[in-house]
Image (tube, rainbow over the protein chains, first blue to last red):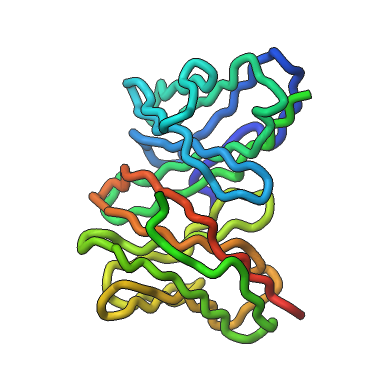
Length: 116
Length: 113
Protein backbone atom coordinates (compact mmCIF):
# COMPACT_ATOMS: atom_id res chain seq x y z
CA UNK A 1 0.00 0.00 0.00
CA UNK A 2 0.90 3.65 -0.26
CA UNK A 3 3.51 4.87 2.16
CA UNK A 4 3.30 8.53 1.15
CA UNK A 5 -0.02 10.33 0.84
CA UNK A 6 -0.49 13.60 -1.01
CA UNK A 7 -3.53 15.87 -0.93
CA UNK A 8 -5.29 17.19 -2.90
CA UNK A 9 -4.84 15.18 -6.07
CA UNK A 10 -6.22 18.00 -8.20
CA UNK A 11 -6.78 21.69 -7.55
CA UNK A 12 -7.88 24.58 -9.69
CA UNK A 13 -7.31 28.08 -8.43
CA UNK A 14 -7.53 31.61 -9.72
CA UNK A 15 -4.50 33.66 -10.54
CA UNK A 16 -3.22 35.56 -7.53
CA UNK A 17 -4.48 33.14 -4.92
CA UNK A 18 -2.44 30.69 -2.85
CA UNK A 19 -2.69 26.92 -2.78
CA UNK A 20 -1.47 24.51 -0.13
CA UNK A 21 -0.47 20.93 -0.90
CA UNK A 22 0.03 18.38 1.87
CA UNK A 23 2.40 15.44 1.94
CA UNK A 24 2.14 12.84 4.66
CA UNK A 25 4.29 9.86 5.47
CA UNK A 26 2.13 6.95 6.54
CA UNK A 27 3.21 4.77 9.49
CA UNK A 28 6.73 6.15 9.58
CA UNK A 29 8.47 9.36 10.51
CA UNK A 30 10.29 11.32 7.86
CA UNK A 31 12.78 13.96 8.92
CA UNK A 32 13.34 14.80 5.27
CA UNK A 33 10.89 15.06 2.42
CA UNK A 34 11.42 16.23 -1.13
CA UNK A 35 9.22 18.28 -3.43
CA UNK A 36 9.32 17.92 -7.19
CA UNK A 37 7.58 19.63 -10.08
CA UNK A 38 6.85 18.10 -13.45
CA UNK A 39 5.70 19.89 -16.58
CA UNK A 40 3.96 17.98 -19.39
CA UNK A 41 6.21 15.56 -21.25
CA UNK A 42 9.16 16.46 -19.05
CA UNK A 43 10.97 14.70 -16.26
CA UNK A 44 10.66 15.45 -12.57
CA UNK A 45 12.55 18.47 -11.37
CA UNK A 46 13.58 18.70 -7.74
CA UNK A 47 12.37 21.92 -6.19
CA UNK A 48 13.39 21.69 -2.56
CA UNK A 49 14.28 19.52 0.39
CA UNK A 50 11.95 19.83 3.33
CA UNK A 51 13.64 19.43 6.72
CA UNK A 52 11.63 18.81 9.86
CA UNK A 53 12.12 21.61 12.36
CA UNK A 54 14.31 23.75 10.14
CA UNK A 55 14.25 25.72 6.94
CA UNK A 56 13.82 24.04 3.61
CA UNK A 57 16.69 23.86 1.17
CA UNK A 58 15.77 25.12 -2.29
CA UNK A 59 17.32 24.13 -5.58
CA UNK A 60 18.86 26.79 -7.75
CA UNK A 61 16.28 28.86 -9.56
CA UNK A 62 13.37 27.99 -7.26
CA UNK A 63 11.90 31.02 -5.49
CA UNK A 64 11.65 30.30 -1.79
CA UNK A 65 9.19 33.15 -1.21
CA UNK A 66 6.87 31.79 -3.85
CA UNK A 67 7.03 28.15 -2.87
CA UNK A 68 6.71 28.07 0.91
CA UNK A 69 7.58 24.80 2.57
CA UNK A 70 6.69 23.91 6.12
CA UNK A 71 7.72 20.65 7.77
CA UNK A 72 6.24 21.11 11.20
CA UNK A 73 5.98 17.46 12.16
CA UNK A 74 7.74 14.22 11.37
CA UNK A 75 4.87 13.03 9.19
CA UNK A 76 3.72 16.17 7.40
CA UNK A 77 5.26 18.60 4.96
CA UNK A 78 3.29 21.27 3.13
CA UNK A 79 4.05 23.20 -0.03
CA UNK A 80 2.22 26.49 -0.51
CA UNK A 81 2.26 28.09 -3.93
CA UNK A 82 1.75 31.77 -3.21
CA UNK A 83 0.26 34.29 -5.61
CA UNK A 84 -0.17 31.59 -8.19
CA UNK A 85 0.08 32.38 -11.89
CA UNK A 86 -0.85 30.27 -14.91
CA UNK A 87 2.81 29.38 -15.43
CA UNK A 88 2.75 27.67 -12.02
CA UNK A 89 0.31 25.14 -13.42
CA UNK A 90 2.12 21.83 -13.10
CA UNK A 91 2.21 18.41 -11.46
CA UNK A 92 3.68 18.65 -7.96
CA UNK A 93 5.00 15.48 -6.31
CA UNK A 94 6.44 14.85 -2.88
CA UNK A 95 8.57 11.99 -1.62
CA UNK A 96 9.86 10.57 1.63
CA UNK A 97 11.68 7.51 2.88
CA UNK A 98 11.65 5.36 5.93
CA UNK A 99 14.55 6.19 8.25
CA UNK A 100 16.22 2.82 7.81
CA UNK A 101 19.28 1.70 5.90
CA UNK A 102 18.87 1.34 2.15
CA UNK A 103 15.28 2.47 2.31
CA UNK A 104 14.22 3.87 -1.08
CA UNK A 105 12.34 7.10 -1.58
CA UNK A 106 8.61 6.64 -1.99
CA UNK A 107 6.49 9.12 -3.83
CA UNK A 108 3.04 10.50 -3.38
CA UNK A 109 0.58 10.34 -6.25
CA UNK A 110 1.06 13.97 -7.11
CA UNK A 111 -1.10 17.09 -7.21
CA UNK A 112 -2.26 18.51 -10.51
CA UNK A 113 -2.40 22.30 -10.10
CA UNK A 114 -4.21 24.39 -12.67
CA UNK A 115 -4.12 28.16 -12.31
CA UNK A 116 -6.72 30.02 -14.33
CA UNK B 1 22.77 16.76 -13.44
CA UNK B 2 21.58 13.24 -14.09
CA UNK B 3 24.45 10.77 -14.29
CA UNK B 4 22.70 8.19 -16.42
CA UNK B 5 21.92 7.69 -20.10
CA UNK B 6 18.87 5.76 -21.28
CA UNK B 7 17.20 5.25 -24.65
CA UNK B 8 14.30 7.60 -25.17
CA UNK B 9 11.80 4.89 -25.97
CA UNK B 10 11.41 1.13 -26.42
CA UNK B 11 8.69 -1.25 -27.50
CA UNK B 12 8.01 -4.69 -26.09
CA UNK B 13 5.45 -7.35 -26.95
CA UNK B 14 3.04 -8.34 -24.22
CA UNK B 15 4.19 -11.46 -22.41
CA UNK B 16 7.79 -11.08 -23.48
CA UNK B 17 10.69 -9.90 -21.35
CA UNK B 18 11.44 -6.20 -21.42
CA UNK B 19 15.13 -5.34 -21.09
CA UNK B 20 15.79 -1.69 -20.33
CA UNK B 21 19.42 -0.57 -20.50
CA UNK B 22 21.09 2.22 -18.58
CA UNK B 23 24.60 3.63 -18.85
CA UNK B 24 26.21 5.15 -15.77
CA UNK B 25 29.88 5.22 -16.73
CA UNK B 26 30.82 7.83 -14.11
CA UNK B 27 29.26 6.00 -11.18
CA UNK B 28 31.20 6.19 -7.93
CA UNK B 29 32.00 3.24 -5.71
CA UNK B 30 29.44 4.19 -3.08
CA UNK B 31 26.60 5.00 -5.46
CA UNK B 32 23.64 2.69 -5.85
CA UNK B 33 21.62 2.18 -9.03
CA UNK B 34 17.91 2.80 -8.51
CA UNK B 35 15.05 2.14 -10.89
CA UNK B 36 11.68 3.84 -10.74
CA UNK B 37 8.80 3.98 -13.16
CA UNK B 38 6.08 6.54 -13.69
CA UNK B 39 2.73 5.67 -15.15
CA UNK B 40 0.96 8.62 -16.71
CA UNK B 41 -0.28 11.21 -14.19
CA UNK B 42 0.95 9.26 -11.17
CA UNK B 43 3.90 9.61 -8.84
CA UNK B 44 7.01 7.52 -9.52
CA UNK B 45 6.95 3.95 -8.24
CA UNK B 46 10.04 2.33 -6.76
CA UNK B 47 11.06 -0.87 -8.56
CA UNK B 48 14.46 -2.06 -7.42
CA UNK B 49 17.95 -0.95 -6.52
CA UNK B 50 21.42 -2.45 -6.20
CA UNK B 51 25.07 -1.68 -5.60
CA UNK B 52 27.07 -4.29 -7.47
CA UNK B 53 25.31 -7.62 -7.16
CA UNK B 54 22.37 -8.58 -9.32
CA UNK B 55 19.06 -8.16 -7.57
CA UNK B 56 15.61 -9.65 -8.03
CA UNK B 57 12.26 -8.93 -6.46
CA UNK B 58 8.64 -9.57 -7.29
CA UNK B 59 8.61 -6.83 -9.88
CA UNK B 60 11.87 -7.11 -11.76
CA UNK B 61 15.51 -8.12 -11.94
CA UNK B 62 18.46 -5.78 -12.00
CA UNK B 63 21.63 -6.85 -13.74
CA UNK B 64 24.70 -4.69 -13.05
CA UNK B 65 27.86 -5.19 -15.09
CA UNK B 66 31.02 -6.12 -13.28
CA UNK B 67 32.58 -2.70 -13.90
CA UNK B 68 29.29 -1.11 -12.76
CA UNK B 69 29.25 1.21 -15.73
CA UNK B 70 25.91 -0.04 -16.97
CA UNK B 71 22.88 -1.98 -15.87
CA UNK B 72 19.76 -3.59 -17.26
CA UNK B 73 16.32 -3.70 -15.74
CA UNK B 74 14.42 -6.81 -16.74
CA UNK B 75 10.65 -7.17 -16.55
CA UNK B 76 10.30 -10.91 -17.13
CA UNK B 77 6.77 -10.98 -18.55
CA UNK B 78 5.66 -7.53 -19.63
CA UNK B 79 1.98 -6.65 -19.48
CA UNK B 80 0.10 -3.68 -20.84
CA UNK B 81 0.11 -2.19 -17.34
CA UNK B 82 3.90 -2.00 -17.49
CA UNK B 83 3.67 0.77 -20.07
CA UNK B 84 5.39 3.68 -18.34
CA UNK B 85 8.47 5.88 -18.25
CA UNK B 86 11.32 4.04 -16.54
CA UNK B 87 14.00 6.03 -14.76
CA UNK B 88 17.47 4.80 -13.90
CA UNK B 89 19.10 6.91 -11.17
CA UNK B 90 22.39 6.67 -9.31
CA UNK B 91 22.52 7.81 -5.74
CA UNK B 92 24.71 7.58 -2.70
CA UNK B 93 22.85 5.75 0.04
CA UNK B 94 23.86 6.86 3.51
CA UNK B 95 21.15 4.92 5.22
CA UNK B 96 18.04 6.76 6.29
CA UNK B 97 18.00 7.73 2.59
CA UNK B 98 18.19 11.47 3.04
CA UNK B 99 19.82 11.97 -0.33
CA UNK B 100 17.73 13.46 -3.06
CA UNK B 101 17.00 11.72 -6.35
CA UNK B 102 17.85 13.53 -9.56
CA UNK B 103 15.75 12.29 -12.46
CA UNK B 104 16.94 12.10 -16.05
CA UNK B 105 14.67 11.79 -19.04
CA UNK B 106 14.01 8.06 -18.68
CA UNK B 107 12.83 5.46 -21.19
CA UNK B 108 9.24 5.32 -22.35
CA UNK B 109 8.41 1.62 -22.52
CA UNK B 110 5.39 0.84 -24.65
CA UNK B 111 4.08 -2.69 -24.23
CA UNK B 112 2.24 -3.76 -27.35
CA UNK B 113 -0.67 -6.23 -27.33
